[in-house]
Length: 181
Image (cartoon, rainbow, N blue to C red):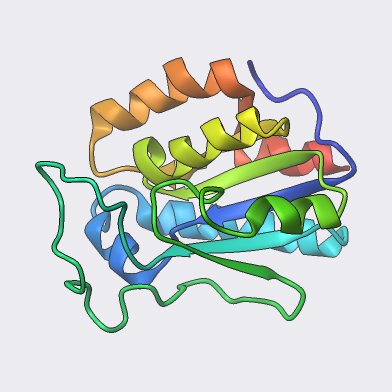
């Protein structure tokens, strides 16, 4: 469903906009994602709404065909690439989704948040996992369609057209900012 409203108690969650992840998706629209994520962050801050930066420093322990051995990330892998304001919330995760094993839900509830707007990389991994969990936690979910990217174009399109509409609403950065009022 195309975005229809943004709750007055919304938060922006920027997922995995960090050196190591951005580098992996460098050829897949990262510059547009970063520019749009920064526009969203500015709009949320101007309205006194929370901005959450999420980075990942590990992985779930289960084996997969694409698993990376523990400790194999470069030193600057988790360094955030967008500016962090003084009042922004920082969340470090060890799994795909930003809720599992972190204080994200508590931080949002403490601020009275009822809706989350998601942006980040990768659409079909961190963003989708966080969207699913946000929905299961009872938040209204919106995804900024031009502020997400994925190395896998098929997975990206599937998340945008098949998964996110079942979890909430989608809209462009401009549409979501307009709904902020």
